[in-house]
Image (cartoon, rainbow, N blue to C red):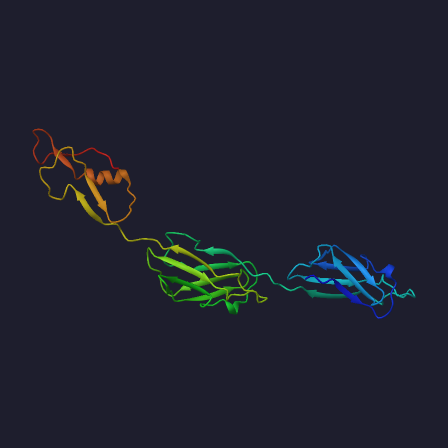
Length: 261
């Protein structure tokens, strides 16, 4: 807001009594720095903020005290006070997202939570303005908004698919309490956890192979990237690899030593 705060008097006033002490402006209980002028021709006193403008979306209180007098020295009968609120043109922003953008291994029973920077118009936060999709197809769910926390929640109707990329989109259809829309659509993605167990897809030497070289390396191929705990894997493999000691019968076998890479 760039206009000064103006007050018009009913008669000619003593300009020397109209100053920063008798004409004040407060915001949130704090004095606003500024200067005061008086135009005798129009009988208008004006308060001009030092910053040149007032802050957006703020409530101000202006006060004219009984210290102001007319040309005859008569003071106001009592302090004159009024309040006003400046326009809010600032668009809301998203300040939190859950799951986080780029998150992986997200639980399939997760909900989507979006936090806003200011009070919002709850009627604009719907399944049409807060969506979840995968592969270009929308996910069915319900949307709610908590005014006290300023958090919108999308709850899918059913569990999400495993190991799947999902995209969250908040459109410019959502608006703050003053009708300001997001500056632009906001989209991000996350990936659900993969709880599909790995499978063994190759073995070398092959099961039942004979005449295998004594220097061979045992190799196991998995269907997906897999964490291997060396000790347990080694025990699992080595307990199955046995060799005959010289002169020892088939019933006397020992594990083969080795390591896992």
